[in-house]
Image 1: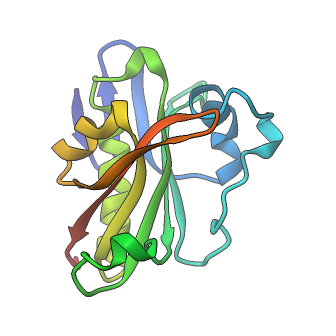
Image 2 (image 1 turned 135 degrees about the vertical axis):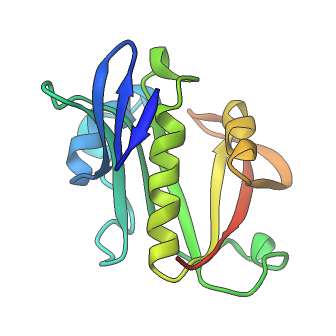
Length: 169
């Protein structure tokens, strides 16, 4: 797969655009992958109205299908995590989802790189998330480190806090 100027050429699904999208475009994928116990209408993002927040996605050229997504917004980390973070602005990564049959193909990594570059372009800082345990290795490959004990989120499954620094671009 080749990444050129926020476009991917994927061997199975063709050309993809990587970039910002309206949050509503991601609701169906997020509901299917992250919260099947909820209705699509319940997928609105907390903090998405912040002017520096962004929802990124991989969108299939032609069909417009969103096949991967992630969101970032300025948000203070929980107190227990904040005690170990380096100084700097704090950003929360949330709602990272990739269509299950496309995981491991680089699409999710490209979307994550997009939202990390957004944080860098807005002064950088610390990016943190509540990661699903099965996805922790994905985040570790992107420079995140685990913090604290795992816990189980009702209806969703085991999670762990993770964070990384992001330099200013």
